[in-house]
Length: 193
Length: 173
Image 1 (cartoon, one colour):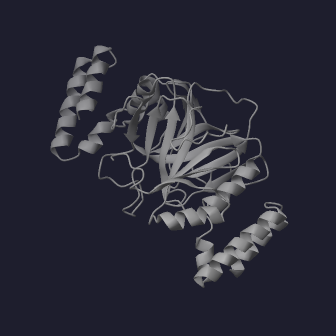
Image 2: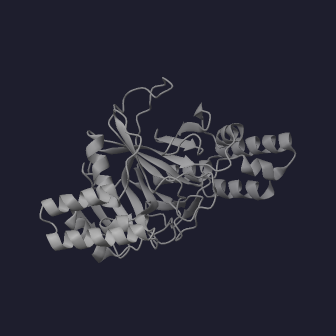
Image 3: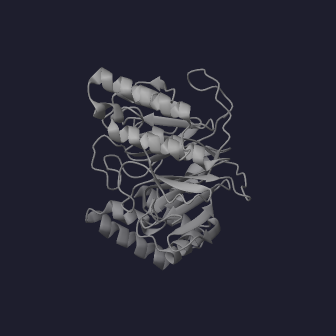
């Protein structure tokens, strides 16, 4: 609990959280610790630690056209075809996600959809209007070599390919969405460093 | 293999490859397939996808999103130089070994709307327990709703964030 409190305090001092947030967070953590009798339990109960990206939900005017583009460019199979969506897993059934050993982490997949984004959620609740945008998605590919990949993409008819350093290329997908591809060298430590 | 061949035929019909290239490629693919390397034969064109590299998340104040994802997803902040963007390394493989990250950034001057939108991202949690996940999200200030093995929350910008187990969301269910 000491370390957790120190972290939160630092965040408060740096202006990352408000006073009210500091109080609320520490109250919840302390309450949880009291309930379980351990401080470490409190830390583990604040937020979740993700094991990877499960899926990317991609909505566009023609899901089949989008799916065909991603299948062609990234060699992805299409499974689970429905009236308005199809799933593109990043591998074959039974394969593990790259460098993941836990057996309960599925392959990442893209769901290409055509649907009304203003419709209520499945539980009937209205969806808030998002004020942000995911303005591009970046995917890691094996053996990334910018020149070779650029030549391949050009041969595939991919539009608006443009370089972004030795470990990245951007392009437009079938609906003008910005897609980036990277090698493993582009990661949280190197991007923007 | 079937799709690979179909693509090859399409390339041949459109004149992108000639007859000799077509035959050589089929022969090579057959040899590799017979040797048990069908998966390696497929990416003769295109690329082998390893996973998501990053999610570029643009908003009016990157710090608000940064702090939310750091708190709710326990993501580690990197390369925040106070210049309008930060990287958030997610759990899973380490950076450089396939680990994915979110870039929260302020809106740029050249944001161009596309006809498509990534309307939500779903994250996998290992060792799933419905009660534990719901309580952990509530403790982080989120308001989870959902079903067994899958919950949804909204971030400070009203963006949908799904969190699921392998039973809740997998591509082959």
